[in-house]
Amino acid sequence: MPRRDEIGGWGALPRFIGAAAVTLTYLFLLAPIVIVIFTSFNPTEANAFPPTGLSLRWYHEFAESDGFVSAFLFSLWLGILAAIGATAIGFLAAYALLRFFARRRELGQALTMLPMMIPHVLISISLVFMLTVVELPETLTLLLGHIIICLPFTVAGILSSLDAVDRNLEHAAFTLGASRARVMWEVTLPLIAPGLLSALIFAFIVSFGDVYIALFLSGPGKTTLPIEIFNYMNWQSTPVIAAITSVQVAMIVVLGLAIERLVGLRHVMRIEETRR
Image (cartoon, rainbow, N blue to C red; front, side, top):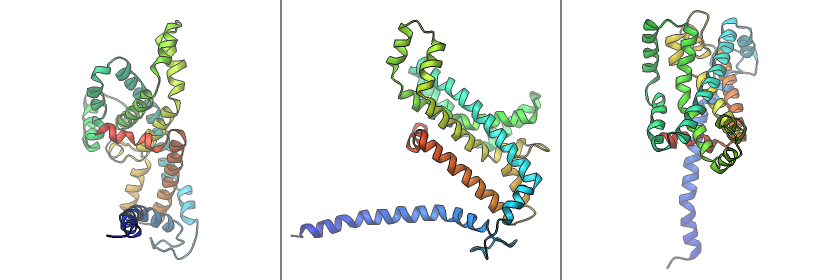
């Protein structure tokens, strides 16, 4: 009969293998990002890793490039507007599903998840066809496209926050004579404020990194940063792209930490569970 320490030793082996597999997986996923960040400090024009030295040359190049800076600012402006619009619509949709159409919640939630399931290329083509029927400014159409692709994330995130709200608090406000609009404004919204803000940030990240919608709908002078990078790489390949990517990674990490600080990334990742 094996001794207890032998059994404990064999029991620890699967945990060690699992921990090693998880560590290797994270290293595999993070290695390209680390390589890009180090490459951005290369003083030469070659995308060499490891870098031959440390320099901020390509960050200065990014800051002094009118094309990249204007595309970055346009993506920033577009992402903020799309996040605000998607969060506002997402809140109204989530509130309606829970408070008025609770029996058809699964159907309504499935419909709001459609933009996540449909390839963005098809959504882009549909919006281009819409422009042949309805005359809209290209920027407005681009904004609508970004709101569409952000909606599944905002609806699912806000639904999770609304599920955690004690309905008795709303009922108490109703019994005291408050209208539904006042209850929504003074009771519901304050209770789910962290969830709303996390949905806003998450929608901004999705909008800022979009390629397909912008590729079809961007016009002259209205180019987003991913499209500007794509156009640049068709003709040149210098570490300035690595510098721009590093700035985006830093921005996304900061926003991700903000989401974690507000409601926790596990709460946000319920989006995937809701979709399934």
